[in-house]
Amino acid sequence: MQRPKKYEKQKEYYSGKKKSHTRKSQVIVLPVGKDIVDVEAGKPGKKSDINFFRETQQKFSEKQKFTGDKAYVGESAIKTPKKKPKNQELTSQEKSQNKDLAAKRIIERTYN
Figure 1 (cartoon, rainbow, N blue to C red):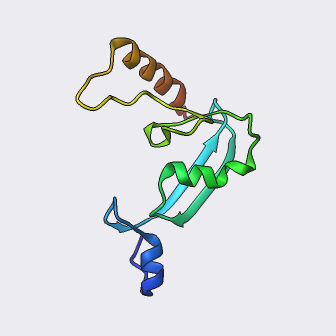
Figure 2: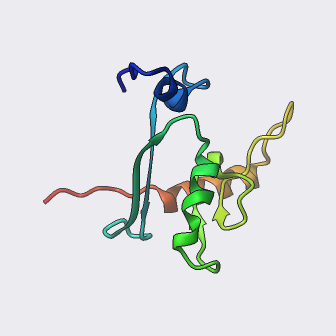
């Protein structure tokens, strides 16, 4: 996004990780990917993915489960891939589980 002119807005939208002024968006879809359940767009960009999700989670049942990427590790409601431990490697079984989870998350688009 273009840098806001007012300093207060600059601070609000500045992402230290990205080193730029950003907006955060989140889309939640059903497993098949044909139905969009929720869209959050244009929120200040200095918020992490997991905190952004936690703010919007009250829209859903506490029993509702989600699947996400490694940005959501630590959230009990989201099934995430296993991260590689520091100075170690993942086992072949963990890699296989990560691939299976990624295959379920990725929605292949077909055009008619």
